[in-house]
Length: 377
Image (cartoon, rainbow, N blue to C red; front, side, top):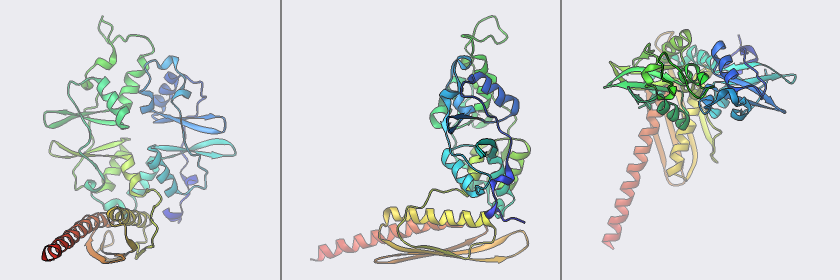
C-alpha cells in the first residue's frame, strides 16, 4: 500500500469543467450549478486560468461578460505531483482545486475534498474541532441585504457567512447561494420575483436565500467526524457551536492548512526527531514546529539552533499519547520547554505560547536587573 507521504495526485484525478475564454459568465455559472462545481478552468495561450463561484459575484451582467475577465492564472500540476505539494498550493492560492495536465491537455483536477478525506483517515483525525476552526467568524444579521453579504465575501475573500438572529445562528449564506439563485438572473436590468414590481435581487434580505439546514459540531468533536459529515453531505463548511452560540467555522481550507506551510525563511539548523509513522501527523508536526521557531525568531533574532524531540506511548490501538520537548539555543541562552498530550499539533501550539511567555518574562527580569545596576552606580 502506498504511503500518503508518497501519494501522487494521479491516483485522485476528478472531473473538471474546461471552458473557452470567450464563454459568457452566465453560461459558466450555469455549468457550475449543474455539475455542483466551485470553479471552471480555461486555457489562455499556454497558461491556465480559473474562475470560482466567488469570482462571479463581481459581475452585475453575466450574460454580457466573458469568463476571461475573471480568470486568475494558477499552477499546472502533473499526475506525478505529490499530494502534500498540491495541498500547499491550494492553501497558498486559496483554491479548492487545481488542474492536472498531461500531454498538453487538462485531464482533470485534484479536488480539496481528496485532501480532507486523506486527513480524516490519518492520525490527525483525532484533533479537536476547536484546534483547527476559524474563531469568531464574520457574520451578517437577519434583515441585512444580500448586497452586503456579497460585498463582504468579495472584500474578505470568504464564501460562508453565518446569519445571526439575536445570539443564535439562524442560517448561513454562501457564495453559491448568491451566484446560483440570484446572479444568473441579472442578465436583464431588473428581476421579477413573484410580485408585479421590478426588484433588484441584491436588495432582498439574506434570509430570502440563506440555508436554514445547518451542519454543526461541538468544539470538542474530532475533526474526522466533522470531515466525514462534510463529505457525506457535500457541505463546504461546518459551524462549531455551543448550544445556540457560534464559536467558529471549519471549511475545506482549514483541513488543507494542517499539512500546508510556506517555505521556511530561517538561516539556522532546525532538527526534529521521533516523528510519528503517520505521514500526515508527521507533516503537521513539522509545520507546527517550524512555525513555532519562526514566531520566536521574530523577537529573538539571535537563535543559532532549534531542536525538538517526540516520544510516544500507545494506550490502545486507536490513539497515542505524545511527550514533546523543544530546545532553542541562542548565542546567550538556552530555552527549554516540554509538554504532553494526545494531539501532536496542539502540543506544539501550547509549547509556542508557553515559550513566548517564558522569553518575555526573562527579558523583563534582565531589564529590571540592568535598571538596578544603573541606580547603584
